[in-house]
Image (tube, rainbow, N blue to C red; front, side):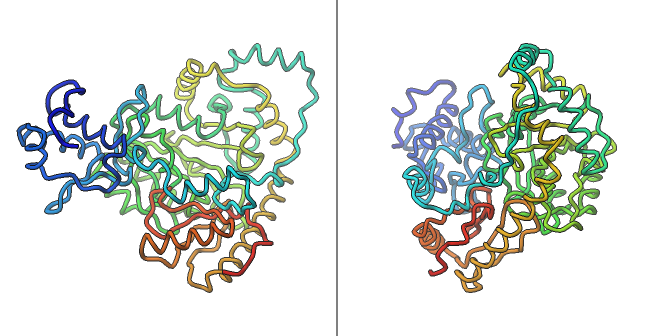
Length: 469
């Protein structure tokens, strides 16, 4: 495994060859997550290079977060991706976290069950259940008119003006926010918005902060763009100022990506006081905020703090991302970004070079939903999801006999729970027991969390589920 001949295929200075060899071993699964590397002295001897060459290579990989060095213990392959920096987006190589064991044994079993289309209760599915998707009808428009719209789509790089006007009305009615339609960019959903931001507003090596745990952790686009990702600890009101301050001091965070309302996966709602405090801190530190608002219209009670952070933004430091995928399904891919005009104009140009703009049909459907359906449908959706959440909690209490801990969901899609386990073997046993009943969950590790945490998307809960262990 470790010999001088293994360095021959690689190019550059000797320390770069050692770096490339270690990365190659990680990519190929020869070195796995958490594995300890030989000592510096042993590596130098086996590779027939100076110890200083090995030290230089290990320091570079540690600086990028691919390796972790522990004083008095040794050097290890990073088993998570906090702090990992991949190379730039042109290469699109995934970071070390993805090189080995692309799917855990549990995930492989889940994939097999889904592929075989067995009878399952898929609580890992974060999409809107099919039976809750509204039956939308196209507005009264002829095929010729639709074709003409599509022909003119290149001139509508920021999106259909009538849809942008409807979004402005929606933001006014839901949040009492005055939105300039010239500061709205229509996107094909939050994923495209995030991609455009990482490509247009950040550069390789930049550091971004996210909630810990967070669904942002599971997205490869950050490190595909050569960015570093750092987790900020949360309590029941969102990220804490102490954790944010420490993270900024240690890592010079450039942007903060937040999902403050019914956060995925924890379901917490950031208090208004915390929103204002985070906003003020970020302004002092010149940190931009990207706010993903996917669930705010799904509160189970009317007294929750579901106002976006953008509502309180007086200095254009927040980019707001809205989406309809959790209300009308993921197949109608329409979202929007609120940001200063010069920013969205530049991001629209980037998109134009990549995929030549947006299709008109989804935009017309989104416009129809906002104009005619959203008020009554979102009320029905809230009621249906609350019933599902209550049914899931009753089942959890019965199945685990009170040993599982969680907070009752306040809205949104997800319940986050802590299993009664303390070892990997215990967690695996419990997950496999659930799997044997056809119950699939998302592991907390998928969101950068520790052992024994799971996310359950209660919209897909089946009340007829067998209660027996």
